[in-house]
Image (cartoon, rainbow, N blue to C red; front, side, top):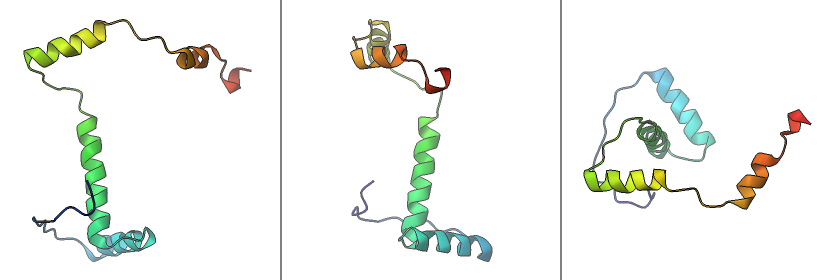
Length: 92
């Protein structure tokens, strides 16, 4: 989310002094104000939670497209083939 987006909504939370001091120290260390620090952290966590979902629904058209992509043979990828045929450093 762009930092220049217009903020039109508020989020109010209550917090203990100790947690607020911790957040303030971390925000200062990262060169951000408290609001930006908390928004960035909450946004990262929200994206992580949503990307980690194992169940998702598709309509029939989207499912057909998804299935076709899974059923299609993989494209040739010489760099990946080379990587997979190279022994790992700990196996040498």
